[in-house]
Amino acid sequence: MRDEGAPRRVVIMGAAGRDFHNFNTVYRGDRSVRVVAFTAAQIPDIAGRRYPAALAGALYPEGIPIIDEAGLAALCREEAIDTVVFAYSDVTHAHVMHQASIALAAGADFTLLGPKHTMLNAQVSVIAVCAVRTGCGKSQVTRWLSRLLKEKGLRVAVVRHPMPYGDIQRQAVQRFETRGDLDAADCTVEEREEYEPHLALGTVVYAGVDYRAILKRAEADADIILWDGGNNDFPFYVPDLMITLVDPMRAGHETAYHPGETVLRMADIVLVAKADAVDAGAIAEVSGTARRLNPDARIVRGASPVTLDDPARVKGRRVLVIEDGPTITHGGMAYGAGYVAAMRAGAEIVDPRAAAAAAPEIAAIYAKYPHIGAVLPAVGYSDDQLDALRRTINAAKVDVVISATPCDLAGLIDVSVPIVRVRYDYAEMDEPGLGDLVEAFLERRERG
Image: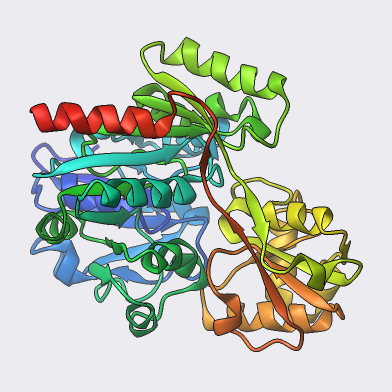
């Protein structure tokens, strides 16, 4: 039994993103609470580190330990934890409740923090791009919107959902304008996948850990902020316009994953992504779900055209396909745009899973995510993982690599075969479409 007046002992379950933000916005200066630890999932090499004292604040002069999620039950019992806060995304509703059961059985309460207590107010307008699952196509929609907004004469800053996989203290506030900035920050493949395409369009990107401090920097740069969401999380900033993508290639997932159902219910605009690549039945299914859960939202369709840089170079050749990492791992897709492009180009696709024996780090990913098909997820959370990716490619004995990761993989690793890139963007399908709805929002904004 906790002593009356003693601080409530809390554990925050996370994946180096939402968990840190929840701590910063809700718990950091609260003397009635003692955050005993964070737990880590999804992201390798986070467990065993500490959330640094410089970011944790005066109540935590030694910082806060980050432990593996597998130790949650023992931690709750040994540290007499009062409350477990669940704070990561793109997991099934059942997974959330399994974690709740572990916490409850160990004597703790289990809670989720919602938008009201964790979203920050901005001094400039915010358009948020979110999705019901990882891999719906948020990034290309955000890029398309940044072009549209800049054509209207607006200064645009993209604020990206956190990806602090390196030195957490050093990454508190990050501003990226050039590829040199990415090199200086030692960005991982996963970070580069999100940042490089924005920089190629001349759009400044912010990311990091302390999103209150990030907001102040972004407000000084921009007339409007584009929130580029991660996984299927809801925004860290109060959106003036919220766009949520649903994926008809995974119809039914929009009500099965946390917090994807939340962001669908929050949306002002529901965008049916990849509508050019599925049948009418799948579009009708996800559209019907959106209308049922959020009848006030506008629903529009969008295309995700896929282009291969040099189709003639891969036709009839033995190729290894590399896909965007998170989409293929915890996003649950068996393959992505790279596989589609390779098939269209008439390539002979080589299954990389046999070659993964050359790199145990990659073989472990296939073991953890057995749904992955004959493609190689682009993983590079560490130098060791990046080198394992290189060894797997070189062991595959192919003529060409088709890379659908949005970052320039050839600039990061030295492989023995040429790399041909796949690119994907957003395109309108309806009239009025997404652009018309955003322009109407801008007109309302101008009128005040």
